Image 1 (cartoon, rainbow, N blue to C red):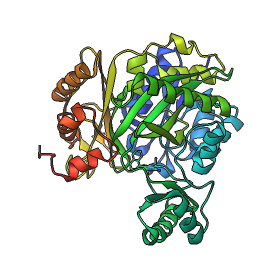
Image 2: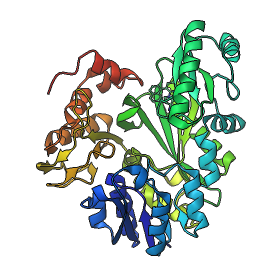
Image 3: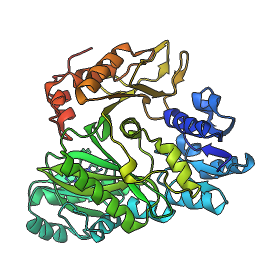
Amino acid sequence: MFEKILIANRGEVALRIHRACRDMGIKTVAVHSTADHDAMHVRLANESVCIGPPAASDSYLNTAAIITAATITNTDAIHPGYGFLSENADFAQMVEDHGITFIGPLPEHIRIMGNKITAKQVAQEAGIPCVPGSNGSIDSEEEALLLAESIGYPILIKATSGGGGKGMKSADNKDQLIEAYRIARREANVAFGNSEVYMEKYLQRPRHIEIQILSDIHGNVVHLGERDCSLQRNHQKMLEETPSPALNFEMREKISRTACQMIRHLGYRNAGTIEFLYENSEFYFIEMNTRLQVEHPITEAITGIDIVREQIRIATGAPLGFTQSEINFSGHAIECRINAEDPKTFISSPGRISKFHTPGGLGVRVDSGLYLGYTVPHNYDSNIAKLIVHGKTRNECLMRLRRALDEFVIEGVKTTVPLQMELISDSDFINGKYDIHWLERLINDKKFIEN
Ligand code: MV4
């Protein structure tokens, strides 16, 4: 087992990883920017190293500084968390080249999945259903127009290096397609330095369903069920739940088995998430995330499995401690992402926390680096807390979520709590009837009343 792990991240995920390490008797090293001197992850860690100025590009993305910090602290392994360097194949390779274990997949697998065309090719080879579209890149307007005729409109142009919706444009007809092709290429070039795009049939009202998998170096693969992540705004997830209100037992089994099949085909190891769009009782692979995800705690809530602990065990070469049939799925879980933002304008709201009280009780978990007197810096993303509730049924979970959001006190910064309250009180949400555009419609329809 590792003696010491460096956590190459900040905020609540740095705490999350620290907690798994301490539960396993492993020492931790925090790294931090000068803006994060007083951060909770720095206070809790056994050791800490300042790796640079506030800008993420000079600190949390500074590979040389992070590897140096790992070397001088005699670290055995690095956990990248999510965001920052978590899906950077070159970083994973560099870590391994320095004789340090990267807690995650092989660099090669990060690279394959980072390229959405090669990711789709792997899925197709493994017999996974994909959205109808181009085989590979689209390299001219003529090619785009020709292929669109055979796929049928509406069409979606996507960036090969994409994710997060950048470089993605839909089109209802030929004229729009030419425009979409140009804009998508330009956006992709600006965002990723790669203008390559591909094409898919545009699904208009899908849900976003993802399967959590764990796999070890011995070829054991298990799934931990799905998460419904359809409630998002501007590609930022707001609330996730498991199980999905849209899936029955048979469909859940079918999608989960499919995800495991893809993992086996790849020889992938560690934690991963396979993303699908789900519409009219059909599911289609779109992408794979080769990292721990923000919403992983809802899966932990219904399975009782500590996903970060398993990631660490897998990275040591240990076999998974359980088989698929030993995993019990129990009850319902929901996560609310609480951001330091104005709940109406979504403008970020950094500042000093002047009042702070977290909800508690049975089935309530709060993952947050906040404390009274802490100043939320303006330099990083605005997520400041995650509230995860678990109940025997979806209804019990919803009642508990309402209760917990009511108990939450965060003052000094504006938060998205009022929006979360509003959305969980909407009858469509209560009935589980929503798709990936539902939240944006709710906000735009001004159904959302001022707090
Ligand atoms: C799609 C789609 C509709 N049809 N692909 C958005 C970012 C990237 N992860 C994939 N995305 C989408 N791909 C086809 N063929 C709609 C989206 C999409 C979306 C997907 C998941 C969660 C939220 C979303 C919000 C807008 C669009």
